[in-house]
Figure (cartoon, rainbow, N blue to C red):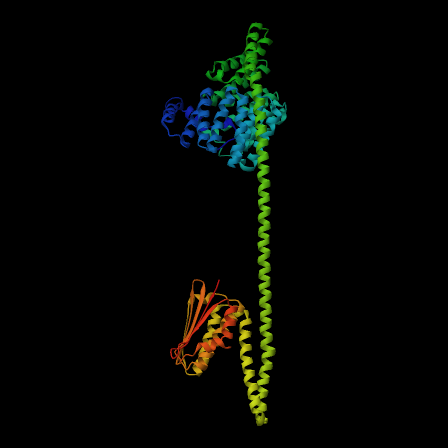
Length: 584
């Protein structure tokens, strides 16, 4: 079913049941039985709304009771959508019963709920309810502000239903004596309705309801512009529909419109006949605004006919009704509700501003922290890149310059040996030292190169070095390592000292152990690397080693690694060198 804004198009499904003759009896009775035993949940709220909506057309006092029960239950369940639509049900009954100050209070309460729901349809509807309340209370300019907001929302979000927005603005223009604007909007409403084939269709109930509402507002606009024949045409065009359904409030409004047109056409008999039809309607005592229009109209008609008794009778009724609707107590309540709502809005605004300021502060602090982190990461990455670039440069320089110079010295020593046999011992020493320096330089170049930071590269070089040295001595070699270590990245300092420690241990085993086999085990345990290098050689007296300079190399490398190490070498039982250091 299509949606429409404001109470004039509300709950057409209920009206359809009323039209069928079923709603007044079995349907409404069954709902009233259900609601007594129904569980206090959202379904019960919906049932209460249905009952309230039905009664708002015929018995607004009962409609108010059921709507308030629905609001109380929705508030207890903290169900905003239920609260909002229960207020909508209440609004129509309050409007019909003439309790405009209370209607405004609830309408103002509904608007922030609609905004909290972020529902444009609900926001439009709540603005429409506020507009109705202000119009009923005689504040037409404020009402116009809210009805324009309804039009704005409809244009943006519900263009197919814009016809209803132009229709409901008609009474506001009439109240402001802007009759031309009222007629323009009424005609625009009908044109938009005809452009929408889904609505301008006699086969659907909601289409009929929408179309006849537009006809009624056209009648009001034409009457205000003194186009009385056109006004009667549209009033009478919608009258059969309202006489055949149980929408008593709309029927009464149409009767009043026709009566007023006949009065302006100087046809008092027809005007009186339609006005008195209003007073025979069962709902009229619950619809004081309509009754006030009727009694005021009858007082004017009888005064023009010089019928003082009848004129005085209806004049007294008019004064009584006006006092009942606009008495001091209700005016005070209206003013209090405005002050209360204004105070609440200011309080909400103050809290909102405070929260916004707090969130801005949190956002600023967060941005500062993020900026610091990003800056630190950028600086760190830049330094790492600079370090890697410098290491690459050092490695290249060592390889190209010093490496080539050492190679040249070695070659020239060999040539000098051939030409000067007497200097051969000295040249042999130079050649040997040059080869040692070249080997050490190769190790330094390898350690400096950032491409070798992964432990996998360290293991490969260690394995290759040990295999070359030991195989030359006919010593068997077994090398095992923990596969999980391969992915670790070591610093240049760690790689250098670990490799040189290993290299010293392998050299010692090759030179002094007389071993037949060397075993290397490298494992990871509790965030530590444990390296064991053992052989099955003759062993040696470690006392002499620890008292002399033999320990210096091991000790230096271990200290730079922050590592623990020990050497075990029982005589004729082989030698074991152990190293343990922490990794992250």
